[in-house]
Image (cartoon, rainbow, N blue to C red; front, side, top):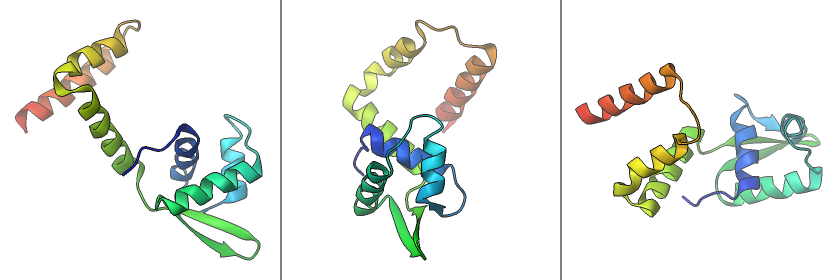
Length: 123
């Protein structure tokens, strides 16, 4: 699975936020909450996502509806695996440390991280 460019990933996040097929207009309204999208540009990105196999579309009257073919979880796992391979396993501690160096983590976040690590150690 190829990594999505930022614009395509933003659109996929919008698609993943709907439990049912989403119309282009509904998706545009949701995406516009963060950054305004030109309808033509959105349609171009959706076409690219369909060509790549990330979404399927169906036309109903004048509207086109999109359904994700790849779940957000599957994509994020693959993206994370790919990133880990690029940086090398021995640099994982440095990566995590860098993510939190300039930010204090809450006790709850620390507990979640420790629980996650323990679950991975036990297999």
